[in-house]
Image 1 (cartoon, rainbow over the protein chains, first blue to last red):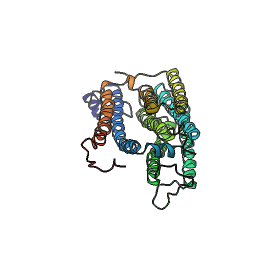
Image 2 (image 1 turned 60 degrees about the horizontal axis):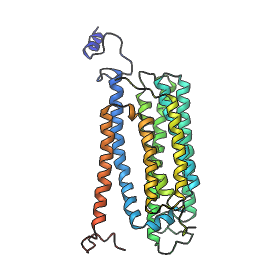
Image 3 (image 1 turned 180 degrees about the vertical axis):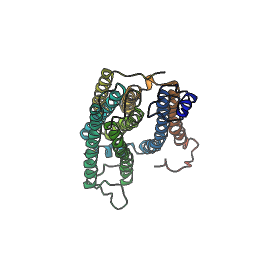
Image 4 (image 1 turned 90 degrees about the vertical axis):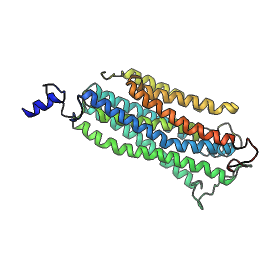
Length: 239
Length: 104
């Protein structure tokens, strides 16, 4: 009886509360909205986190426009375009995973969409690793003593300016890739929960909030792609 | 306020638009618009971001409280970028290059 009285006191009404309802929330709707709000505050913080790097990019780009254009030509826009498409596709499958839990599709459908998201994320990271290796082969790792571009640097551009582009390239895409690796680590237990049948139209906060994180990472890449890969396509001084 | 469920057809449309805009930004990079190069690239990127925010991230259907968080996110980012640029842009105004970093 005490549980029953407690339930009324907390405003759940006499009907049994959902097993996933935490005791400090009135109902599932309030719990879901509070969770989403918390996730958005976290994302706002993440925007500031990446914002510092975008600011550094902006400041150095304004000073060394030619160096950035020339260095950007070393990135393969075809690979960048492919990876952009892969990441957008993974955002679609993640949105569909959230949808599957919202409308109560079977756990196989839920896990399937999440597995597709992970798979596309891993394709992206694999391509990224391949690109990083390419930069290593071309002597473009921006560490003192290592940076030694094999291709000639255009006139009027110093090695230091060239190196700054690659420092920003590795810092920005590296932090972005780290977010994706962490994302794959976070979705793994959520997939396990989905497989156990934990998610339903009433309760799917973890899926929804992970979706917000994954789409945020997608948005970062939407900006990195033109800023890093597409500067020098019309620039004739490159290689 | 109950949760709004976005139909799958909306997600497919947004996905299609994002892929098309990716192709457009790649195509646009092959033309030299002079100082407008970055304006074109960033306009396309912001459009793509808005599609992801509004539909994939459900902001269009979210509560006003979440709109406030999203708006404040952009507000602080603009302070970070714009206020820093006012410094770099004004360093040469009085002849002396105080910071040194903008000197060539």
